[in-house]
Image (cartoon, rainbow, N blue to C red; front, side):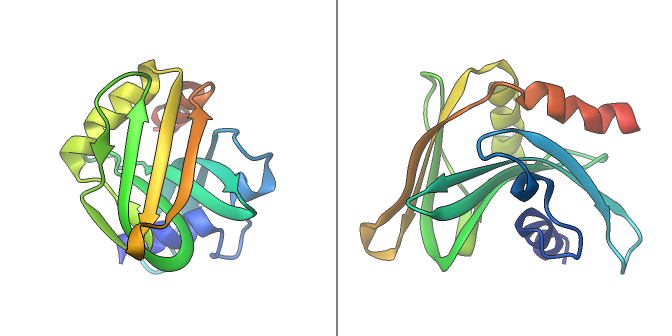
Length: 155
């Protein structure tokens, strides 16, 4: 349920428009909503990026009790691979991909969070079935840390 909620949050499907969707692409933003079922606040630091007219949202879902998982969402197609390379570090592969999304486990997300906070740029690559690359783009990490820290400041 939580992952589905986060997917809906990133896509801006929960009533209020997504902060990323309301902003210029490639700008990091922080947003929070309240899950109507659990009454828990769910916050993300996210970036909207567009390739060939297709929108992708990359976000870290904040978790006060543990690591913030990194997720990418996009097309309603089956993703088979998501690679993230920050600056010149070793690429990291998502642990699970499915229809319209991929995400990293807690350990990899923690490492990626460190890299995002210290890095300057990240290369994102998403493949679908049949080796079709649907996202192959370098994004800026400028502004990520400033937006991410807003979650800690709220607490």
